[in-house]
Amino acid sequence: MNVKIDGVEVYTNVEMPFAEAKYYLDFIRKKYPHASIVTMNVSVDGDEVQLEVFKRAVPFERIRRITGYLVGTLYRFNDAKKAEVLDRVKHDV
Image (cartoon, rainbow, N blue to C red; front, top):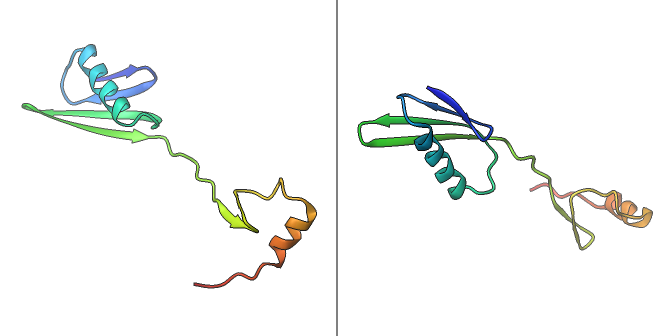
């Protein structure tokens, strides 16, 4: 059975009421409040329920410490700071 709840595809291996599937989705959303859930698999085996969640990837922005500032990009740096960055010596670890 599959059902779409609040934009999330929920797949189950048995027939279950909509309210029960929504309960499992709400449980996961409370546990991971910042996750962007795409799909969820609900596997029922007797009294045991297993939830498998697939989340949307979150883009990662690199943050570096450059000339005393934590920055992701150099777009706000003036020409002098940009020149300082270009003059830096990279050390291999």
